[in-house]
Amino acid sequence: MSLEIFLQTLASGVLIGLIYALVAIGLTMIFGVMDIVNFSHGEFLMFGMYSSFWLYSLYALDPIFTLPLTTLFLFAIGVLVYKVVIRKIISAPMVSQLFTTFGLMLLFRGIAQFLWKADFRTVDQSIVGGSLQIAGFQIGLPQVTAGVGAILVTTGIYLFLTKTKAGAALEATAADKDAARLMGIDSQKMFALAWGVGAACAGIAGALLSTFFPIFPEVGANFILIAFVVVNLGGFGSIIGALIAGVLVGVIEVMGGFLIGPQYKLGIVLVLFLAVLMFRPQGLMGKA
Amino acid sequence: MSKNPTISQPMATSVAPMRVFKISNIFLLAILIIAILCPGFIDNPAHLNVAILIMMAAQMGVSWNIVGGYAGQISLGHAAFYGIGAYTSTLLFSQFGLNPWLAMLAGGGVAAAISLVIGWSCFRLKGHYFTMATIAVVEIVQIIFTNWDFAGGAVGITLPMDKQGWSVFVFDSKVPYYYIALGLLLVTLLTNFLIEKSYLGYYFRAIKDEPDAAKSLGVNLSKYKQIAFAISSFFTALGGSFYAQKELYIDPASVLSTSLSIKMALVSILGGIGTLLGPIIGAGVLTIIDEGTRVMFGGSGRGTDLIIYAALIIVIAVYYPTGVMGWYKNFLARRALKSQNAKEV
Image (tube, rainbow over all chains, first blue to last red; front, side):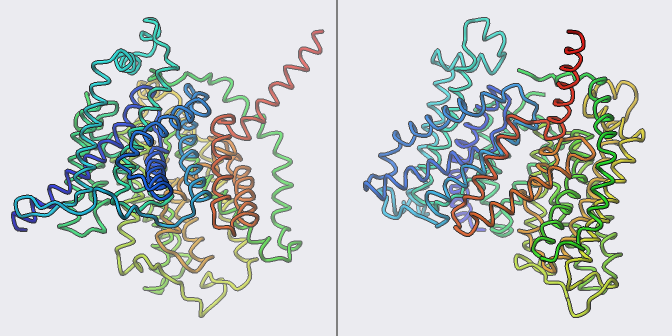
C-alpha cells in the first residue's frame, strides 16, 4: 500500500465516517432522551434520500438546495411517529419497544416499496458531481460535500444542545427525566423534539448521500447496523462519542475492505464491535 | 429514566399460567388427536404445506422461548443457529454421505457448542446491548457463509434427491414431512415442559424477573443463561436441518437472515412470551396471516404483504405486549372478578 493509496483510503473512510456519525447522532439522541432503541432509524435516512430524489426528478431541484425542505419533512415525520406510536410505549417493557420500532422499520420499507417500487434510483446530475484533485490524489466531490455537510450539521446539533434553552431542556430530560419535569420541562415535548431532531439528522444524512449512493427501499439496512455499532462504541447518548466513533468505524470499514476484501467490510466492523463490547460493555467513550 | 426493571408480582404470574394450562389440558389432547389425523383429511398438498409451516414456526418459537421468554434474554441472533443447523446437516449429508438423521443431531450439537462461545461473550451484556450483539453475530455468520465456497457461497446448496425414503430423509409426499414436523414440535414442547417444571425453569425465570436477587442467593447467572441458550440453540438448529431436508435447498438469505430471527421471537411474543403453548398459537396466527397476505397481495411485488405484516407487529407490540395468552389470562381474571362482584351484590 503506497502512501498515496493509504491517504486516499483514509480520506474516503473519514468522509463516509462523518455520514455514519450523523446517522448515529440521531439514534443516540433518541436513546439518550428516552431509552428507546430506534430500529427504524435507517428508514428515516431512506425517506431523506427519496425526498431528495423526487424533488430532483420532478422539479429539477438539486438535493443540496432542497436540504432545508428535506430536513423539515423528516422532522415532521419524526414528530408524527412519536405522537402516533412511540408515545404509547414509553413505559412499556423493552420487548414491546424493540418490536414496535422493528415493526416501524418493516412498515416504512413496505410503504416505500408500495409507493416507489423496489427499483434502484440515482441522482445522476447533481451540481456536486465530479471529483476533486488535491495534492495528487483524487476524491469525489459528492463525498466531500457530504462530509463537510455532516460536520456542519453535527456542529449545529452540538451548539443547539449546549447553547440554546430548548437544547438544554433536552439534555436535562436525558440526564434526569423526573428532575427535569420538576423544573417545569414538559418531557412529552422533549421526547417529540428528540424524535424530530433525530429523524432530521438521518434525513440530512440521506439527502447528502443521495448524490452518490443508490436509492432503494431497503437502503436503510446498510446504515442501521453501522449506526448501532457507532452508537455502542461512542457510548449511548453521547454526541461527541458518536462523532469520533463514526469516523473510526468509517476508516476501519474502508481500510479493512481495501486490505481484506470489500465483501468483508461490514463483517470486520461487526467483529470489532463485538470485541469492544466484550472488553468495554459501556462503549469506548462511555462512562463505566 | 426507567433504569430499574418493573418489579412483577411473582404470585400473580405463577398462579395464572397453571390455571390456563389445566383448562387447556383437554383442548391439548383434542388438538393432538386432530393433528395426528389431519393428513387423512387434507388432500391438497398446499394446505398440508401450510400445516407443516405452522408447526415449523411453532417449533422455532418454542425453542426461542426457552432463552427469550423464560430467561428473558431477547436474542435476535437465533437465525445463526437455524442456519448452522441447516448447513451442518446438509454439508455432512451431501459432501460426506452421513446419514441425515445423524447429521441433524450433529447440526444441533454444533449449534449448541457455538452458542456457548457466543453466550460466553454476549451474556456479559444487558438489555439492548445483548440484543444488538446477537444481531451482529447473525450478520457475521451470514457474511462467512456467503463467502465460503465449500458451503455453496451466495448461491447456496441443493440437496441430492436421487434416493428417497426414511433412511435418507427425503420424500416425494408431504405426509412424512408433516409427521416429522409434528414429532419435532412435540419433542421440543416436551423438553420445554420438563424445563418449566424443573429447577431450571425457576432459575430461568429468576434470571428474567429478579436477576440481582437470584445472584445474591447464589444463582450463577451466566451459567444458567448459557444452559438456556445452548438448549434453545440445539432445538433451533434441529428446525433448521428439517427446513433443509424439506426444501432440499438452502442459501444464506433463507436460513441466516435477521428477519428469520425476528420471526422466531415474534411467534413467541404474539402467542405469549414465556408461556408453554403461546408460541403454537402465535405460529398459527402469524403463518396464516403471512401466507394469506402473500396469496392475496404478494403477487403485486409492491410490498402490500409487508405493510400488513408490519402493521400487525406494531399493533401487537403496542397494545398486546403479553400476547394471546396474556389477553386470555386477563380475560379469565376479569370474568372471575365480575362473577365475584355479582355474588357480592
